[in-house]
Image 1 (cartoon, rainbow, N blue to C red):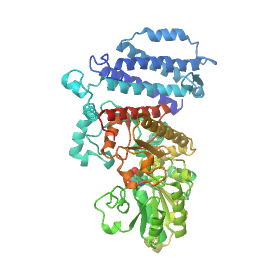
Image 2: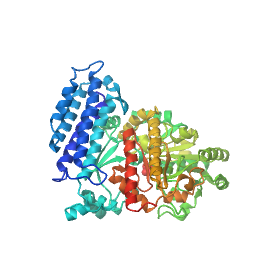
Image 3: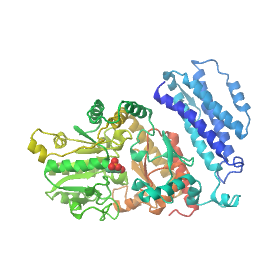
Image 4: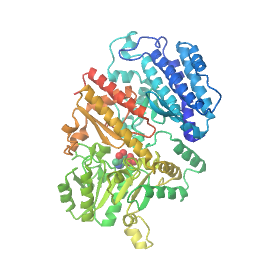
Length: 617
Ligand SMILES: Cc1ncc(COP(=O)(O)O)c(C=O)c1O
């Protein structure tokens, strides 16, 4: 059995457990009580789950197994239906039927030869579906419904106070009341960690939710809520959580050693794979983080040109090292961090998107070594880049002998195997890769032209090597455990099929969410490209200047203001997480079309909830 099929069966098993635990955890009497307006009761959801697992997934998988070329003994369809329904309709009966069906399907599929998993049949309304697809949906569907049951049986705050149903709580009240364990953890965290978190982007009001485990496209919090994870490991988990090939590679490598303090074959293979995917990657230097990589790129550019200044763009983020914290967030005059000497910031010149005249003027300073930018747009496309401007920038830097650095920490390997460079057809001199390049582990790489990269190389001339070489060393650079994950990820990503599918799903998501805005008559837009989306409520694409690239980067950077946090809370209540601070998210390859549709539906419900609270502009 392939690791992918094993994962599907494991999930089928564990999802039955999730349903069982959720049902057992329901407070007495809550299962059958009337639903909230416009929603299903827990009993209705459980009945629906039973019907779907038996009559859609179970039945269709069996038909595919037994029809045409029977793989197993004859299938008595009528008997199967009767037996499945004979159990009755009480909560316990329904649960037993669901669990038994999951177990039976696992038993059936365990014996199925790998080649047969792709058998397909056409469902009258759902289209062509393979055994593999159906089997995967069994686990996903059960988990989705377990989350809905958990929500239906959770007492609302005002109900808890009075013992009977009252008005709907606010979004924030519901968030607080349904996450007691997260709240308790946060109370411990603030006593030990600044703001109670490990990353500025995870600061959260009223308190963050704490995750217990993650798998595939989802993560589970300590209070039993399930979220579709559109933060995807800050963009690093392009293949989703626990991809079997990556888990296998890491597990195998862990047995052979985490760190050799020596060279090893995996780093060579990893470098070869990167070079085969990324345009202009003539040489590769491994690092650990995006921050470290953009810092190294700037240093390489300085040594190669003998100049000191760097041009960066308003609203573009390159990590948290001194020089590049300038002009990241509105107001752009103030660096994103305190503690950076003015003298350091003086060597960073700030350009504006789409303003070629200003860049040309800045490049007239003979001290400029490099121009650095996020090629597809600042802060993960919050401030998008006009491809024509990108091409003009390429020409201009080439003419002036200035090093063009693309920060592809987010877009590398994501938009295409060759990242934004392949997507836009523009090749940089140096490219910074992180996140997806290391398959979700802390790994990164600087790649680019040999003459530039060789500023890091030892030439054998002691004087040159001591005075004109870029020194670079990191304890964890290409550590075998990281390289193992990187190689496993790139072996999958190099073909480009994953990215093509993700880009299609990104289009589907943006179109679906924009349709929701239109249908509800709400001013707003969901924009982005490839598998990245950004939500803005309060102005449409035209008013924001997104259609003709005339936007104001500061306005885009400010986003929705406090409404953004409220929308995020509402989306969490509807089972979707994304990057709260910038209201953007990254899709991952574990997400199905049904997941995309679930996100669109969650957006619809969240807007409805915001409207009821009179918080929409
Ligand atoms: C475009 C970009 N560059 C650099 C970084 C910094 O990477 P790291 O967090 O690995 O230091 C990030 C992080 O999100 C990023 O989005």
